[in-house]
Length: 400
Image (tube, rainbow, N blue to C red; front, side, top):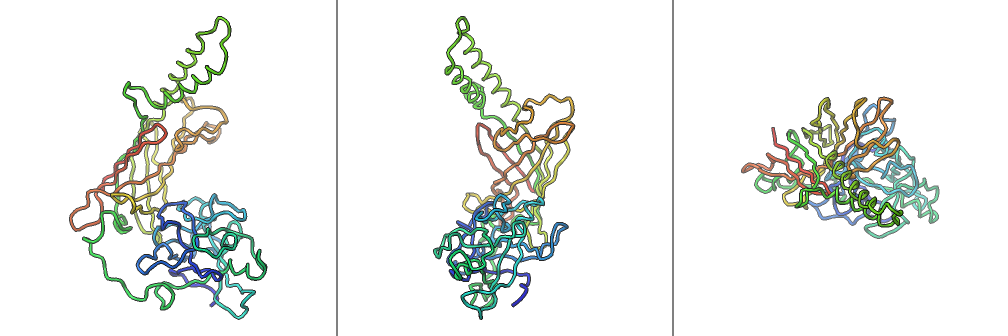
């Protein structure tokens, strides 16, 4: 067969006769890939992979993307790892390292156990050079996929190599598990609000992202109490010095004051614009954020997106990065020199350059589709409210 053409394929392991799929048929980034029994017709999108030549400026000769049809996310090595036995997942980021670890080189390779067999392919990661493989040479469905060293004969003799060889079955071909007939067209009435990727493509939403500390009935913050309790525990563990018995209470009071200051510092609000579009065959969302502080500038991040149909209403999910540089001379309440601080698990203080530091901020969106007009599955509003680590987050976006 030689070089594979761009197109949509089911990918079957030569040894196990099982197919590459996403655990739980998930649409979420970082969901693990595994080998699965072939799903029934009409439910195979999470086992279908769109093969495209990588064409951006960072691409090298032979680089390809394998993009899951259901989620729109690329096959990717977890943590951008070059190590053997690292799991393979689906992922959506577009920075240089993520693109490199989501690039694959596909070559026709022979089987040692069946030398006459053709149409078998190795799928090698461009960053690590390691081959896509079934972990521990397992035959059972649900076994995770990993990257592994190129098997000259495999870890189990000649047959071990067969666990790293794959058959690409074009979707739509007879006898492949793809569908050879065109399914009946869905009517808009049969599609739930926000239940298809087409519900969002070509549409733009604007609104706000807001984070504030959860307030207790007495008006104080949960974060302030947590930090105060830490100081209480520290004070209780150290015997007071003679004549300094009141210092423990002062330390606890200081902890609560510090906690309230931290809670106030973490409150923030962003203006957000999300534009959903199709880039070739890949679904993308361009997210522009602008923090509501003096001197802030807009920041734009382009990434993939998925659907969470397990939510009621359905939700569209993606992550976007933004940041605000600290200007010279500005008071930074989070400044601890040369120390990375995890503030709410969504902030990270890092070194920027000689002019100071900046807060890099990742906003995770799982916004639910609302207000679809009669006869349409395109939402007019995307909304999310959640609490985490003593903080309340609210996102409200309207179609424009």
